[in-house]
Figure 1 (spheres, rainbow, N blue to C red):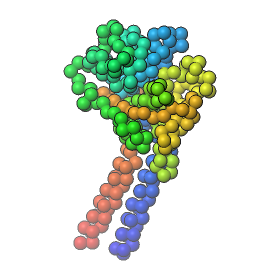
Figure 2 (cartoon, helix red, strand yellow):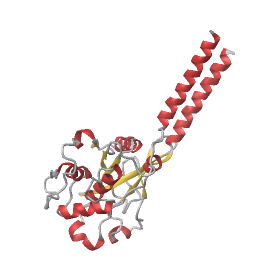
Figure 3 (cartoon, rainbow, N blue to C red):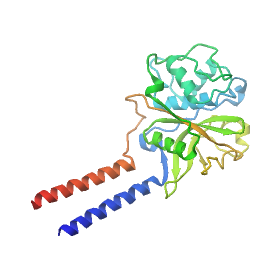
Length: 280
């Protein structure tokens, strides 16, 4: 009898492990787990003189909206486009590396620019003075290793954090927002679901790319094979945690596959312990 029960418990654990591995295959999109939807701040094709290089600000606006930090009390912001317009009104038209510099200014009002990048020409931001955003809520991965960066993105998305991705093409750089990740049956990362601040521009649309949420395939070398001309590749990624206590409309948290596995294993051990007590 004891042998049969032991075999049964082992079979249950094996099924849980298989189920967890299967759960890792396919698509994970952050809004399916946490509610709400993706955000997509776009450059205005009719105002490129002021915002053609502000892709980082578009990404920053999306991440601020997702995490709740973009809606400071009494400021009147209600969507990512309004946040982006605020960046446009306060920064010169230039590159800035990644969304972290913009979000830092949003928190503390300090221009965290890179040398030769966009600068603050109208004082603003400083909506959360005293909050240690960099050490408490912000993370980055500049390992320049595709598998590691994709792993960081997966971890951040599962935690409900807003994620931005920096991509490069020769000497050019671009910033997008990440809302989901794709894996195959072996656990290999194969693509990302993104929104792109350039998606209304003619130069972007000429490649047949759509507006809103789009899927980009990524090979093991980090190349976005179906994005624009196929020459863009992963450079780095950053994340911003959600504001404490903030949830998306209709949001909730679903257990991650590893959590489900641990829960199942725990229940199995509880059952085994109860059976042993009964036999004793």
